[in-house]
Image (cartoon, rainbow, N blue to C red; front, side, top):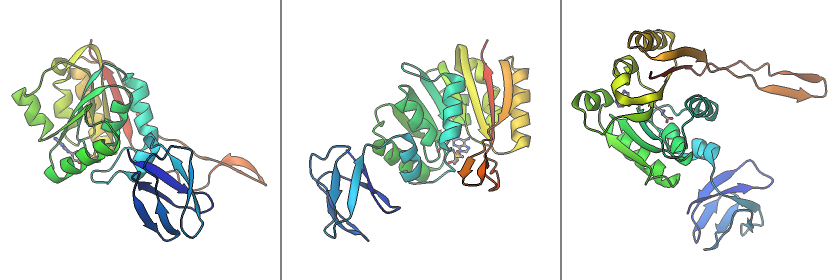
Amino acid sequence: MTVLVIAEDEDREFLVEPGEEFGTDLGVLEVPEGVEPGAVIETHLGTAFRVRRLRGPDLFHHFERTGAPMIPRDVGLVIGETGVSVDDRVLDAGTGTGVLAASMARAGASILTYERDPEFAEVARENMALANVSDAVEVRTGDVLEAVEAGTFEAPFDVLTLDTEDAPSVVERAPDLLVDGGFVAVYSPFIESTRAVAGTAREVGLSGVRTHETIQREMQFDERGSRPSTAPVGHTGYLTIGRNG
Ligand SMILES: C[S@@+](CC[C@H](N)C(=O)[O-])C[C@H]1O[C@@H](n2cnc3c(N)ncnc32)[C@H](O)[C@@H]1O
């Protein structure tokens, strides 16, 4: 299984395979076959690398990127607000890089995710293999709306997660796609589509519909004092939640 190696004194980390000979600018690493997380291995030039098991935020940093990946904080909000967990079935679109799909699978759910770009879908399948969740995530190439119209899957699902521009059209069908009490979570970087999603969710009778901007300020601690970072606060997006029934 792929592991992460982190240089102890340098700002460098790489994904490596057990048994691999890996060349870095800090020297060549011979990764032992049975290498365990926590081990320290040295390059032929003597730079020490600590071995780590891959966890969620590492996948965010090391997945091959296609569609704009959801950042770990926003993944946390989706999982926290919908309660995605073991034994849940989730319908997700669009897959994009697959950060959200992989994270929900690592929380124990089974995911059916749609990606309309065939190349993106192929990269997402490779990312699922890296995250060790290929058995729990089915990446289908295709348009989620067409799939909903054609009924090409077995509904209902426990949770519906959407990160696409056409999310309002899918939300329109949420009552048919979700179990009673199931959640829909829609992520969007823009106010216009967010407003359309919230309006549609109310029109089709979802309960508890609400939208939050997913903002967070980093704290800065230095010798002069403690305060929120003065670096610009980057906007990421809006998260709309609703519930069936
Ligand atoms: C912002 S990315 C999703 C990122 C993803 N949530 C993640 O965490 O990596 C949006 C993706 O949705 C795909 N997409 C847009 N509309 C779609 C649709 N109707 N059906 C399937 N995929 C769609 C795009 O090709 C793009 O890859």
